[in-house]
Image 1: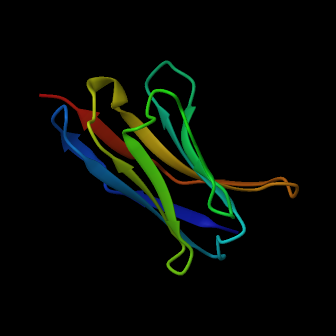
Image 2: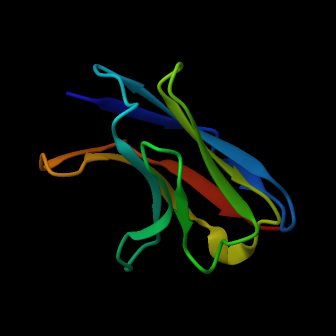
Image 3: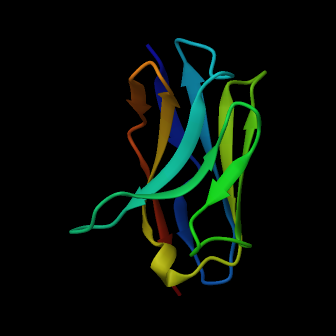
Length: 117
């Protein structure tokens, strides 16, 4: 069983930066696909970025060139560096761990990111 805890959210002005962290416990995450998702009230949760066990990454078009996902398997932690933040990036950000082929999925509790002047 993997437990995920996000941190690093907060209030930032447009154009600013934040780095989110997702710390895992209970199991090593090096074989998991890790992802960051976000959700705003009344909308479906959407994928922001994913990083696979081999290190390859995918990004939503809306964040390409601004966000960077990375992982430190030694620390069982995944990061989301968010630069040039926009008001439309305001959301609760969630970390997800999946093990393809095994039907395993784990979510964190979320961290609020608010981009506002």
